Amino acid sequence: MAILSIEHSDRLFWLGRYCERVYTTIKEFAIRFDSMIELKDEDYNEYCIEQDIPNIYTSKEDFIKRYCFDETDTNSIFSNLIRAYDNAVVLREEIGSETLAYVQLAVYAMNKAKTSEAPLVYLQKVVDNIVAFWGMADDDIDSECVRSMLKLGKRVERIDLYARMKMEKAELQREMKRLSKRINRTGIRYSTMKLAHLNYIMEMDEIPTDLVVEEIESLFDVRVNEDVVGL
Image (tube, rainbow, N blue to C red; front, side, top):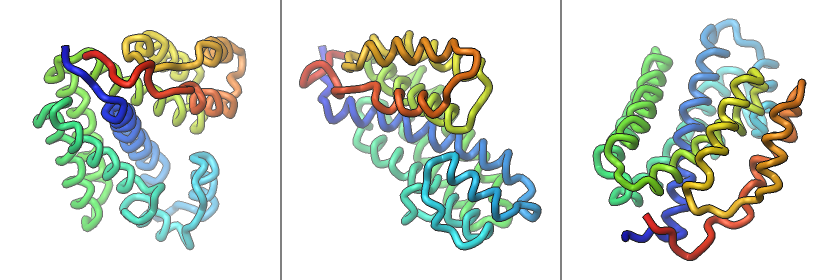
């Protein structure tokens, strides 16, 4: 039986989160800012409030450029993609070279988007490569524990983002069901009370999205049960 360290368990979890963050934020950015010429200053300010990121931008043009492509902005899409790539490189043995390659391709597409006159075209290629990453992970990673830890990060991040974006109730409920089925396959220690509470509030007539964000971010009290996780 192979052994997965706490460090690599944590990296897998965050690789899943960062990949999902890039995927969902690009999709949301494209929907909201498809017509960039008509974008109003207050629109990007509302977006920053929703995503709980500081509005450090001086104009809508500055926001569009820096939020997408500024690697020094810790909240930018690019910086989150680089974090995903950094984790993926360390995890090459766990996820395989072909799975890693799609994260590398996403970085390449992001660099092309940064210098393109039609950045949304290349941002879509980033999205496509993230989708391919998940497909290859399912096909190429033999360890169920590795796959489950990756997907746990994905589900946690998606619930967090969907709650912030106030997505439809059905979408949040769907992701919560997926998380509840996945979590016990990973060996990660979590608060059963918080998980039960999350499932409860997901059934409310009007889901308190701020509470969902608070609870999902504090669901894990300890990374994993032991110093190592069996694969």
